Amino acid sequence: DIQMTQSPSSLPASVGDRITITCRASQSIRSHLNWYQQKPGKAPKLLIYAASSLQSGVPSRFSGSGSGTDFTFTISSLQPEDFATYYCQQSYSTPRTFGQGTKVEIK
Amino acid sequence: QVQLHESGPGLVKPSQTLSLTCSVSGGSINSGGYYWSWLRQPAGKGLEWIGRIYPSGNTDYNPSLASRVSISVETSKSQFSLRLSSVTAADTAVYFCARDVDFDGEYFDVWGRGTLVTVSS
Image (cartoon, rainbow over all chains, first blue to last red; front, side, top):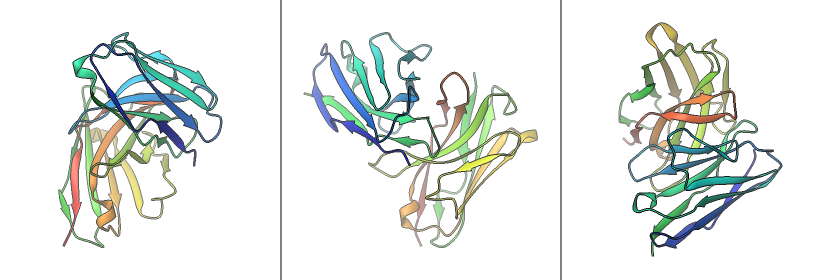
């Protein structure tokens, strides 16, 4: 299985901050990397697919980059509705695997 | 707009079989280019992919669960189902069904709300 490691696990931040989350794969996954947002009691929501493609309807303050084993997810200006947990997920091979999550919380 | 909805018992006894169904509405389960997946999330923990099925019936399972998992599809009812046998408390989780896009990147783009299944006597 491909192991996905996210950092940090917790990220205190304020509205307006630029935040960055990193995700590292245990082997090259080319650009087969997706990012999801999950709020308490809700299903995950797809934000970014194929490392850097913005899902339809997702605000442009969300972005992703990277390829191979190292990936970055950025929110350019944190909004109140962005406090949530974010997960990376590889789609290079099965079994699909996720990072352990990064909780973006109010500083 | 495709929507997914999970249904099934919320309480299963240890050693028994967990059975859930996902109903697909607003679109065809037979649409080319989509798998249909099951995932789960124990309380306070991360996401685990269980497996997926193509409308033709082809399946992929997570090796960690493969000996206990079966996913089936009933295209006439626009439903796909999960069976997980010999459950223990470790199988207590919120179970999600999701559409698994198999082109242009491969990702889970539509999710059900999730259903909590508790394994307890």
